[in-house]
Each structure stands twice: as structure tokens, then as C-alpha cells.
Image 1: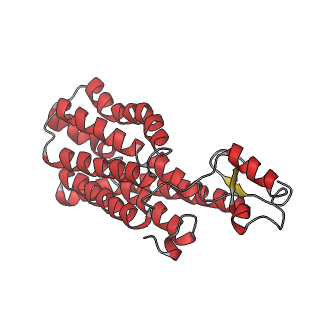
Image 2 (image 1 turned 90 degrees about the vertical axis):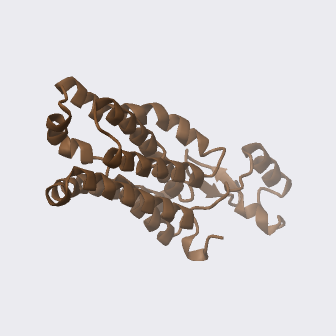
Image 3 (image 1 turned 120 degrees about the vertical axis):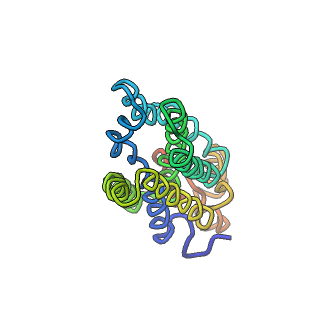
Length: 238
């Protein structure tokens, strides 16, 4: 059970998910950072090198609407753990298995799918429990964290490549992505939040005098959609 301090929408929960997003992206740009070495090592053409970098983003674009839509039907935790887990496996495979263009291409596709299951589902897990200023701050923190981690991905890859070789850079990405899996397992709720349909909300508020004092206490806690991805409480006069 999620503790009170880690409840969705709480500051500790938000920081934990932002940290998980940053961990998941540490290995994202290892290949672009180390691409000159792989071009020489695998004897890649410029076209093949471009495919290895671009297929990551193509896989992300294709899969992100599918995986984000799944979070309306199953807990975001499952989608997020799938995404970060696949990211970890893709980086691990690039470190230990990839030996040329085609194997590298398959693993980059998997990495792109993994990021599709990580970035937007993670953002949705942060934003959905919040509203107004708190939601804006959480989304800004998420964007800042991902940007910092993306920049750090280039730096870490270069430093580790000099010290221990390119495979070690991908092993680091795999380890940090797996750490993101653990964070999600610990802090994300295992069930979808209970929601009341808009028609039921209007009917209940009408029955109980527009959420007046005679209504049971739970009526005032009904979530009424205000803007996509955000919710407000049912207030008197709603």
C-alpha cells in the first residue's frame, strides 16, 4: 500500500517520479554521443548511422499514443514499469549483444518503445492527481528533470567511454533504467483511481441540492473534469 507521504499528488511522490524519469533517460543518448566510434567499429555508412539514431525517435512516435492510451485502462504503473524495463533490456543488449547494424537497429527500436512507455506515462502519473498551480509546477519539474538528464546522458557516455569503453556506458544506462523500475514499483499505485462518470456526477449533485450541506460527505469529493488531465472538487453550486 502506498504510504500517505507517497500518495499520488504528494510532493514526495512527484519528486520520486521525476527522479525515476531522470534515471530512465541516462542511457538514452549514449549512442549519439558515441556514434563516431560505432561507425568505425561496425563499418557503418552514413545512412546506417542515421537509421540507428533516428529509429529510436520513430519507434517512440509510433508507440507513445498506444501506450499512453493504455493508462486509461490499466494502472500507469504497469505501463511505466514495462517502458523502463524494456529500456533497461535494450541498453543491456546494446552493451552485450549488439555487433552490427541490424542487431543495433532492433535494440534501438526496443529502446524507443521503452521511452514511449516511460516519458508520457510518467508525466501523466505526475499530472493527473494535481490541478492548477500544483500541476503546472509538477509538469515544469518533470520537463526540467528530463532535460537535465538528457544532457547528462551525453556527458556520462563520453566520460565512461574513455574510462571503461562504450559497452560500460550502455551498462550504466541499463542499471539506471532498472532503478527507475524499482522506483515505480515502490511509489506508483497498483490500481486505477476510482472515477465517477460526468453523467453520474451531475445526477448526484442535482439530487443533493447542487452539493449542498444536506448531501453526504462523499458528494463533495466527487471529481469533475475541468481540463484534460486535471480534476476539481465538486463545489457548492456545481
